[in-house]
Each structure stands twice: as structure tokens, then as C-alpha cells.
Length: 340
Ligand code: TXA
Ligand code: MG
Image 1: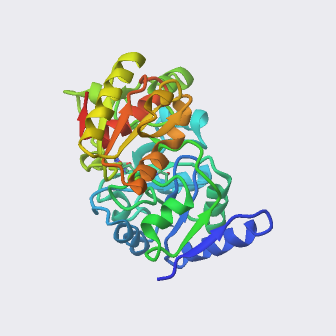
Image 2: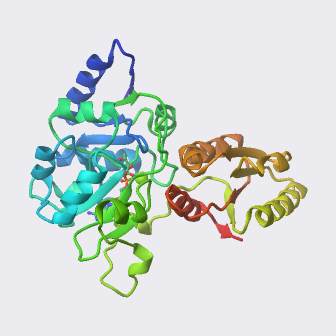
Image 3: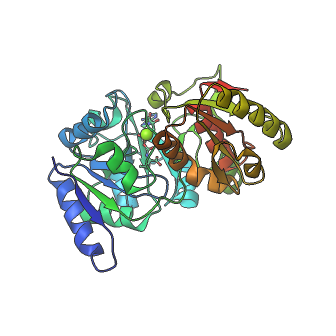
């Protein structure tokens, strides 16, 4: 299959959206930008089309997808939103990087929900994503547009690196701003549970919506909702990855030791670190960030670049687990083979 490359320009935007919506309505699969990462979309009402997503990504069929909607009418056609907390969260955080696990309606085929009676839904905060869903007039089921196990794509080029030739089209609208996937919250239980950390933190949710939430780990022993996706290894770079924790200075010392250790063994070393420490690591390949937001924005690009260079080991500095820093740490932990 030839993958259509559709680059958004002011002049061509309308044409491209129409073309992409048409492919989706005909049962095809199209990668498109959202504010978090690029998604690989199909008509959420079309089980056969949704199956193609799993085949292209080589994704296990028991890992359900997020359904993307553009308005409340569409939301009501896929999920039950009678819960008051749901309305509150939507008012505060949509459109935005928050996915809600809701009781699903029968319009959603089993391919989307992996046979569960719930469905994950979100309204993305990206003009192209919203226009695409509106134009198609159907909700769009979309996981991240990477091969299963690879870092999520934050550019159209990342999508092509993984999926060129196995998807119908990719819309290019530049780099995704947030850089890590949406926060996933299961709201079907008494106390909402964060199943996956993202740009919207549990603290944000408590503050803005006066809704009590806990992270999945804290819910241990209680009735724990599970996210099927969590049992798979995620965000894995090809290189071995070591996550180094501590304060700025102790982290720096440990990393400098490690760089020497690996260099002596003839290995290529990459370091993911803050700008303050970066100048010390001149003997390694460095990907640096100025604050937690930038760390999130460049994380997956950095992991992919390290793979391209062919580094043997990635040393990653731990971040403070506040705000989006918690989401970055979650991804680093999942990618790491070792923690020091
Ligand atoms: O930011 C994002 O969320 C991106 C963009 C494209 O919207 N999408 C994304 O989708 O990251 P995906 O498929 O890579 O991750 C969806 C996560 C998985 O961990 C999956 O197991 C979980 O959401 N999930 C989906 N439906 C669920 C359900 N009904 N119950 C529990 N977990 C669910
Ligand atoms: Mg994914």
C-alpha cells in the first residue's frame, strides 16, 4: 500500500481534511496530529476498519483504543455520561489531554473496547484533529500511531518511520506540543483512578474539579480497575536504558561515573538530562530540556534519535514527580531496564 502524505498548508487545509475524512468513512486508517502525540484513526463505528489499526501497529487485540470526539452530541452517542463527576471533568479539561473511561454504548464495536463494557473517550485540543472528526461526522478510534512497543510519535516523520506502507495516509501538521499521551482516568468507580499519568495531573483534577482521584498504585487493595495496556512493555528504545534518581548533584556524579564505565567497554552513550547538567556530559550524546514541559515535549524524539545514532545505553536523569514531571517519570520507568 502507498501511504498518502498530506502536509497541512493554509491553502490546502480544507482539501486535506476532506480527503482524510473520506478515507476514514470508506474504512481506511489515517494518522493525524493531536496535542499529545500523533494518533492512528479509524471510524469508531466500523469494527472492520478498527481491526486494520491493530494489524498495522501489530497491537495485541486485547488492548482497547481511545475514541476521539468533537462535541457533546457525539460523546453521548458512544458513552453514558450521567455521572456528575464526568460532566465536571469535561467542563474543566476538554478539549484537552484527558481520557475518561466511561460505560460504553452499544454503538461501539468490541474491536474498539476489546470486549470490555467501558470505553475510553477524549476530545483532543488540536484544530486539525477536531476538524477531521467534525468533517467525518463519526467518532474516531485512535491509539498512538507507532508500532507496538516503540515510543509514541510526536511528528509525521516518526509515524512514517514506523508505519509507511501499512496505513492509508498521514496528515502532517508539525510537532505535537505536549509530547506524552493523555492522562487516562477511570471514572466508573466511586473514587476515580488515574490509570496513566499525563499532562493533566491528579492534583490538577482535585484543584479544578473538586474531584478526589488516586493514582492506580495508591488504589492497591481496593477494587482496582485495570488498564489492559499497562501489562505490555511500552516506550521501549532499542538501547539499554538506566534511570538515575537523586538530587541534581548526586545524579550528575553517578552519570559521569557511568559514562566512563560504558565508554571503557567501547559502548556509545546517550544522556537525557536537564540543561544545568548537560555541559558536564560532553563525552556522551546529549538530549537536554529546560523544564518538565520541554522534557515531555522532547522525550520520544530523544529516544528515537538515540536509536538512530545507535547508542548502546541511555542514561536518564530522574525528574521531580510534580505536574507533567510525573508523566515523564512514568514513561522513563516503563522504558528503563534498570534504576539507580
Ligand atoms: O494522548 C493519547 O491518549 C493518544 C492520542 C492519539 O489521543 N492516544 C493513545 O492511545 O495514547 P493508546 O491506545 O496508545 O493508549 C490508550 C490507553 C491504553 O493503555 C489502553 O489500555 C487504555 O488507554 N484504555 C483504553 N480503553 C480502556 C478501557 N476501556 N479501560 C481501561 N483502559 C483503557
Ligand atoms: Mg500507545
